[in-house]
Every structure is written in C-alpha cells, then in structure tokens.
Length: 557
Image 1 (cartoon, rainbow, N blue to C red):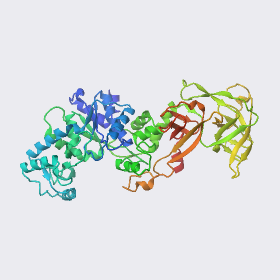
Image 2: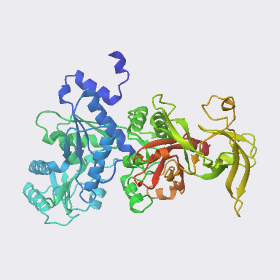
Image 3: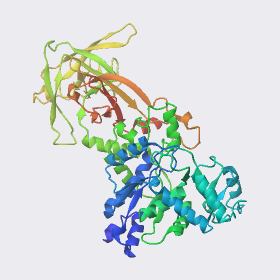
Image 4: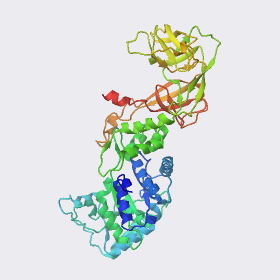
C-alpha cells in the first residue's frame, strides 16, 4: 500500500485524502466538459486522460457534458467529432449531458439570486463594465444600476429572456465585491442576450448563461464529486465556490481543482487559430494530418496507445511547462515499431534492369513481416528482371561511406539477390532513367548457399516493375517551423512551414492490394505510413506518420 502511494499524482492524492476523511467511494463522479465549437486537440487529450483515467482507477462514472452555451459558435458536427475522438482513445462515458439540459434550472436559480439581492441587470456595454472593474491593485467602480430594486431587475431579466432587448444592451451580473483583488469576483456577468438559434433548444431562449455560472451549477446538478480543470481556471475557483454556495442544499458539494495544461512546442491549440487555419485553407480541414487535432492525428496514423503513453510520460503537474513534440513522435514511433507490418515501397523510383536475369522469369521471395513480432510470420513477394529502387540509393561515383549502389559496387536486394551496377542510361537532361545491373544467381537470401552468405555492406528495398502497386504518398512534416508559434497573437501564420506537405508518387509491393483506410505499415528504410481517407480501390494514398528516426533534431543540430 505504501509503495502505491509513492506513485500517486497530486490529483489522485486529493481523492485519496477525501476518501480517507470519509467521502464514500460510491459517490465519486468525474466529468469531461468540452465546448462543441471545434474539434478536440492534443491539449484536450490530457483532460480526457485524467478524468476518464480516474474513472477507471476508482471504477467511478464519468459524464460527457457539452458546454453548449454559445450557439453562435457551436455545431452538431463538433458534438459528433468529440464523441468519436473520445471513443477512439478507448474511453466510454456514463451519461451524455448538455449544459442546455439545465437552462431552466439555471434561470430559476438566477431569479432567486435577484430576489435575494445578489444579482442585478446592468444596462452598460461590455466596454463600460470592463473599464469600471479597474485593475487588481485598485478598487473597482460600482455600476450605476447595481442598486436597482428587486422588482425592476426581475422585470428586466424576464424581458431579456423573452427577446425584448437587442444584443449587447443588457446583462445580468452577480452582486459580489467590486473591491476584491480577484477580478473574477467583481460582479461577473451571468447572462447575456444572444439571439441565436440553438441546436438543441431552438429559439426558446433569448439569453444564454456564461461559463462561470454554468460550470459549477452543472457539476452540482450532475453530482460530480471532483471538477478537474486546467490551470487557467485556478483564479475562477473562488467564483465557482461562491456560485455553488448560493444553490447548494444537500448531497455532494463539488470540489474544483486545477492541473497544468498540456503545451507542446511547434504546435498551436487555440480553437480560434485552428479555425482560422481551416477557414483560410491553410490546411485541408480539421482532420488534416498536420493539425494537432485528435482527428488529424488519427488520420495521420497515430495510435491511441501512443498518445496515452505520451500522456503517462508527461504526467500530471501543478505548473505549466512546454513539452517537446519529439516525445510524442517517439511514443508514436515506438508503438508503430511493435505493431506495424513491414512492407517495401519506393517513393522516388528509378528503374533497374538485371541484364542476366531471364526476361520471362518470375519468382517469389520470402520476407519477414515484423522482426519485433515473432508471430507475424513471412510473406511472399514477386521478383522480376526489372525492379524499382529509390533514386537516392544510387550514385555513379560515391564517397567512401556510401553503402548503397554505385557503378561497380554490389548491394543485396532485401530477401532476394546480390546485384552489381554496370552502366546507366540517361535522358537529354542528364537524369538517370535506367540502371543496368547483373545479379549473382547463387546469392538468393535464405538459400543456404555459400554465395547467399556472402557479406555486402548495403541492403536495399525494391519493388517489381511488373507487379508494383501505384501509390500516392503524402510526406508530412511539422506545420510550424518555430518552437512557439502561439507566442504572438495573430502572427502565427507567418511561422507556417512551407515544406509541411510534399506529395510524391511511387510503387509498393502487391501485398498492399486490399489494404483498408487506417491500416499502418513501416515502409522499410523510409518511415511509418498509414492509409489515408482519400484512398480508393484503384489509387492508394499513404500519409507519412513519422520518420524512422528523429530527423528534425538532426536538421536543427
């Protein structure tokens, strides 16, 4: 038991302390409360992992609650995408809830606050209200409407609800303390007029509650025991508790606690900025494989296991820090190395003709599927007189440490024979079109012959020209070329990496016929690739998920 306590993060310790003080484990309940105004991104994965992970640890229910209080920015598309992302990460929720489920109760509670003299209708603009709040080092100025009568406030609030006023003309504010050093306590806005059609409630409401008013009351209504938020809500906790105190009567009184958000370099996580990328056609959509969205990572070929491994390595902290995206790429690479079948594909092809190999001959060679998995077995692929290799794997004249094919030099073709380059054929521009080689007939891999055991320094992947499967390959790199693209508000577009996507065409071994969208492979010597959503039966499209090694670090160095 003592050993387990050493591994607890501070949120788990809070819960353990509450249980030790008598809080019933049967009353533990957590929630994940996204706003359906965009797709979930890498930053959200931490909140998902924490809340659903605690639910698994304590066998406690976890609610999925959509904070749908701003119909101007919300859409059913986002609701559906959020649910798909959470399920893909391997989690399931107990209740699917919506803040809009509680609109009537929130309104009734707000009316009670007005009757108790704890809320009032303010006719000022948002600019005037913000100006009166002043700064933390000086007292705020009370609104001239702060001491309206209860009757007048009730009348105005009902008219706000019924749509009798224009947007921006009236708000409902809590009457707390305009001298508080915590700016959130200086008479915060509880409701604003918003004449927008709501995806669930239609046109029933002309006013919508603010997040701070909705958040804690929704937690209380759902009997959430621990409301776990990212660190930017730490200063909101006194307001959370004040609002909760006004409505609490019995049962569980929710406790809010905060953790450091997940910040990853070379990445932005502002939904507003991500939307700008989508609407400006800088990317193909929310699920563009360069995007830090969960759907983008899924399409690129990341696995949920790799993302969870990344989150476990990062851990739960109390203070914000910047995590190197190379750690995420490492966990993706590490997991794909274990599960991805190896195949041969050539993405910058040049043709080889083996002149002493019979023109009409074909044979099948056995190649292992995954050296990391002893149960993965072998597959047979066709070998013919004409093959493709990578253009980068040949040089007419090569330096000493070039262990690939060169004129007069020998290499082994993986699973097949040793070949020697004899001559080349070039086009009018001087570009090599064909490399003519000879092969050692007795050197076939696995044959056990003396020639097959002969050592040569290079082994190349290849694809038969006759049987090669045409493929499109999308070479993705980081979307931004600076470590902190989010540091300046609207200048982030200046930091877009112009080389974040390159499209090439090549050929793959025929075993990839029939592969499905989402299937993942290691293209030997090239990297890890996944079948893209754009694939069709007659044209496979592959996304490069991650390189075999951390090439970015090498480039920076």
